Amino acid sequence: MLVPTPQHDIRIGTLVPGRVAPSYIPQILPHGFESFSLTFGPDDYGIDLKALAGEVRSALADSGVVISSLGVYGNPLGDEERDRKTLDLLRAALEAAPLFGATVVAGFAGRVRERPIPESIPRFREVWAPLAEQAEQKGLRIAFENCSMGGDWNRGDWNIAHNPDAWTLMFDAVPSPVLGLQWEPCHQMVALIDPMPQLRKWGKRIFHLHGKDATIRWDVIREHGIAGGVPFAFHRTPGFGDSNWTQIISELRLQGFRGSIDIEGWHDPVYRGELEMTGQVHALNYLKQCRGGAYVPNPAA
View 1: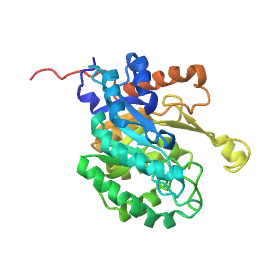
View 2: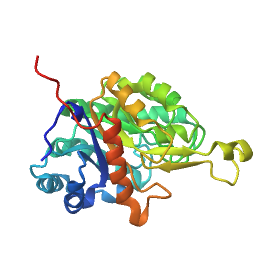
View 3: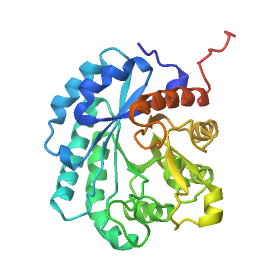
View 4: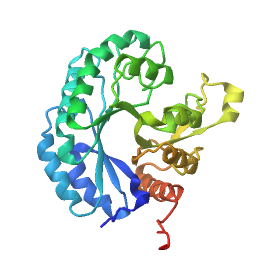
């Protein structure tokens, strides 16, 4: 059983597909994960979250491990059937999150498809202002994932919340204190943004972290640029990429962050397939070391 210490103000966990969580969690609990972020998409529309919460609590038993967040990934600003299902699933997740013990509901902000980001802001306000009110009533926070999903400022299908200029527009449009970020350095690095100054500026808005890193091939950029046929960046599992996670976690502590860093696997080009859980457990132990290693209590005065 995990006995929380001051080190566990920042927990290290991993992402788990919500639908399979009751059977998946018991298999990986012995590895030492301290939290789980459950993920859902439009195909999970109609899932009985209340029943799932009971099954997940049974799977966790008396482990001391927590469900950090529920993540719903789709485009809640769109007008297609899958988009409407995403929005309904977000509303359901906000209702059900307390049953899991989760304090954060995360996901994509959505986007008006193939239009510049500012043109999504009226629709963003229309959708997210009532969701923010719902979250406030439940004592929850909402965290926007910062992945571009292949989009940019002018065009895209999924998410406007991938650029700090967009964050300013979003938080000005819906100035609720429960709206924030599900941040990771990877998505900023592949946009050639230095994550550390961004972390210092936006740290108070970060409610949950995905533990995902990146490797930037600067030699490729110098020779081929970022629009050529040679990949210039790879998403990596923490411990295999370029980020200094000791520095990241130290800055999070300085910002007063309390919550979870949940590893987002299934992206690493090397530690995948049969090596997936090997990479995730390496990341788990690596991030625990970056957090300061084993907790050592101070001597009595």
